[in-house]
Image (tube, rainbow, N blue to C red; front, side, top):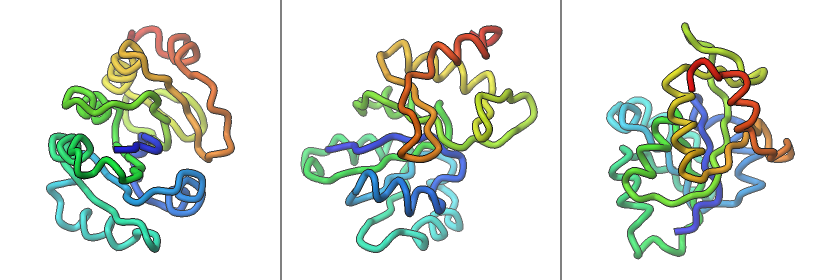
Length: 165
């Protein structure tokens, strides 16, 4: 399975994904991986309805996503993986999914979150999950658009969120 890109984005599929990211990382399928979203029929229907032409959208629980990604029959597919939270990315790895970078995309402000940049607010559980990803060797980026810098964000995260690490 060729994972083109893994992005954390609470909005899941939206204009940036459909236009900019899909152009920069052409994929056969967009996989949305989140246990709660996978069990919400309305969200599943809406996410599938916005699929770009020629790209299949699949919405999976973390376990089902891992089974799909790791299935040898799917090895030739190019995948764009979207998780809602950093904890979802840890879950995918726990189920044996291999990837080397996670892009921290849009995360809305919620009570208790703190700002990384203008469109990424992180909670303590998310920071702890990102640390797990970093400790497992993943590169952590924070790119809103494909042309943004792909610089490693871990040093910045360590400084800004030291109290949660």
